[in-house]
Length: 426
Ligand SMILES: [Zn+2]
Image (cartoon, rainbow, N blue to C red; front, side, top):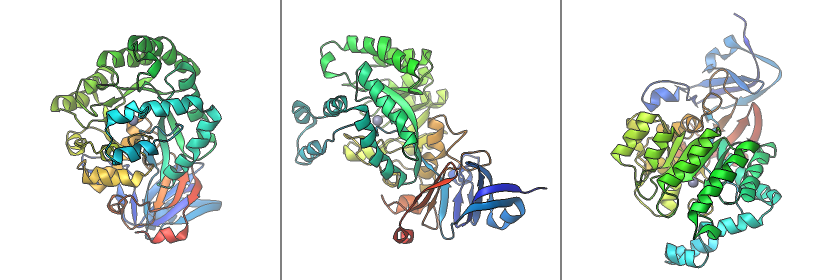
């Protein structure tokens, strides 16, 4: 049998987690190999297996890149499947007020909250939004993220939502992280429509959603269905229109109350329902029956000091596809730290370190409907992988909020090499 040609080879990983296994429990799904190797060619994986079998199966091309992963863990590139990475302004002042005891209402009265970010984002140019997002993406990459979702939702007008999504569209050519765009015009009722919310829903249905669809700027449409945000009927109108125009639904659901958002996700055949802190048994059953992915966002539960955490354990045990993400945003989860999300998912959502890692790779990729391309390491998959300087993948959640990233590979190219001192982090 002829050997497979490779232009990138990763050898001798202490713990290779391919995420390409099958079965109900995490150990099987992880596809774990002690002493594993990965071979890639032209940006795709061509072979994975025990290091001892590499030479019999793979022929390195002249000049092939070689990565020695001795003592290290190798995983697929992480997939951050829920972020608001594009925005202007910050809310550090609001955070300080909150820490000093101010209530949400007091902060809102001072012009804080999501409206502050909407104001700053509307004032910013598209170029400024791009520039502001770049360092955030660099910090995400430093945690091993190679693919991320990016939502609009701070423009809340035709022009400003389009501006945000055009910024999302430009970012992949400027840095290594690949982005999946989501329209989130149903994030909040903008201030100028405070007295006429029906008119804003009309604007979404008649103009924002169709304009974004026409420009091909978003794969998904999301809605924040919650008290103080959008009702189930409003969410249905906006997401239903988006669905007609080819954008699949995702929802911010059951974050503060169970008021029908997950049932709407099930009804619409949404790709994912995210947050789920207040998920009921009936809601869980509805998601399971409809095959909707469940996405955990424990960083915001922590940041808002708003327990309960979402029932990750019950979701996993019920057989749902579980994703895990940072929810990076300036108000309720100001952190690009994937490692923190992994740790919190274990400490508070009830996942094991293996399950949390699966949820931040293959599970997240499936929540974004891109698991045919990223989120696992198997022949034909994109060569997105991370070498972590620790001997087993459990360290990624256990060593809380600390990145072990040594090398990041995107589409077969090394895009980040961390300073050597970090390589002792394990
Ligand atoms: Zn969000």
